[in-house]
Image (cartoon, rainbow, N blue to C red):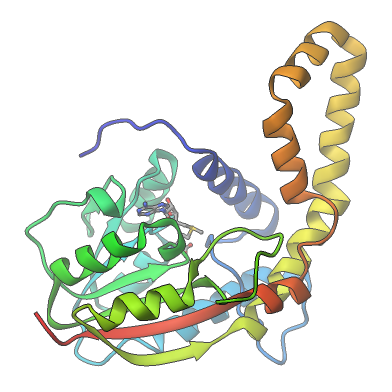
Length: 281
Ligand SMILES: C[S@@+](CC[C@H](N)C(=O)[O-])C[C@H]1O[C@@H](n2cnc3c(N)ncnc32)[C@H](O)[C@@H]1O
């Protein structure tokens, strides 16, 4: 199961996000911050907002849970926190780099399944299967089928993630499963909804912070490097720009223009904590 995989652009993005976040802001997580009323929305408070997010998440773990599978565990910091709280935790991680970080966080206390959740094979069963901003990356029907398979009877699925609001069209920010699609699939599944908390307001400020950082730091840095390369190596630069034109256009459209705003996020997305119980077999 630990075969080396080719890195997707998403995994590369998460790796860069983790390295920069940890170095410059001492961040421990790869998820959004949860901006409580008293917390000023400023990049220097992002670490505190991420800690608030974890507190919020842990407060929704049902009583009686002993074993947890953390799917898409990032750098393993939520798993580490759960271990400290006395849960037995295993992790699923398809990224070589993040698996390495997770190993540093959890040591030999957890088994790390180094694969996509869609590919997981294990005889183990859990009381809780957790998706912290990872649900959006996993094929929806497979996520439900596998979770039903790997949960004990009466076990819970806890998702905290971004969803697309149904019928709102497409915003500039990609990502998130369609909320209506999920509800429809759940109707014919083994699950029933226990809790649904909308935390869009508490998470939307992250988009403005990210946008600000990209505009003020990311864009000028990339432009300076491009200017330097085009002066020094004009022929190679022209050739590479031509060859990767489509990819460069996509990245530029996604990360520039200042239109990935908190306002847009509120319009097109919904950030939800969803707790389901496996009632039927
Ligand atoms: C935004 S990060 C969140 C990480 C972590 N849960 C946290 O809260 O810091 C998304 C995570 O999902 C993982 N991921 C992406 N695709 C996946 C898949 N198909 N199966 C399992 N995990 C996946 C990534 O490797 C990464 O760890």
